[in-house]
Length: 341
Image (cartoon, rainbow, N blue to C red):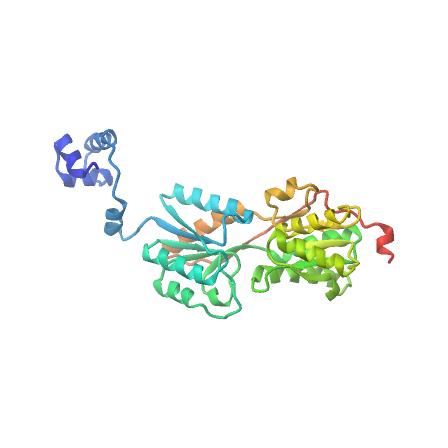
């Protein structure tokens, strides 16, 4: 391993001069800096980041915690965070919570033990109003940006999210404008604030159209393809009269679509379907899915910009970015016979 001492001996200067030159200190001439940096590159010198951290009291590390990288909702957001952090000279420590509170707690403690300069966290939502680990993070004074809406146990941290309610409202309006009056809804995890906001958008659009939420058209699903399949089969077994289905996420919608198609139903001829998220699979599914496009890359970039403001000690407000409806082939006007029942 090449040391500062080795470079100093090769150039014929002191170790202190080498250290200053590599840090671009102003009291070293440009010519000397250029010579030292050239020799350092030739010798394959790699700075000791831990030593630099002791001197600057920073680690140039961010902790990033999401439920699972296999969830396509996070793919572009993670890419944006990593790219922007890289531009700023930061590395990412990455971990999965798998939506388990005990794993989330362990991962966050490990990040804190590594003295990360900041944390990006997609919280594991729970019903409890408090969570000890978030109190510990708050006490550590480590800057935190939540990826998604805050819940009571993490409400003191800033967040970056989309306009969940407005986006869901827009999706329901789309179906209403097509002429659908019997719109089933596949809900998300009961602990997740984003799922509640999306359901509220659905409810509000129906109310403004003079329609009430029919409990017989609301089915508990979750957040996975399997959850969507189960909810769709329940819907069919109960003889649901829906001419359209609005799902809380694209994964749930895809699971629902697979179940409907397997039962011989045609989309959108027999039943329309709307998702939420605009994951890549939605566009290339057997029936391209009408959905809500989330600005995933912009969410990640905004999260890093907010983090840098927190590190500089600036006052930061949570951000909500708009989403938009993407119309594809999974939605159409209902058959007249269906609406007349």
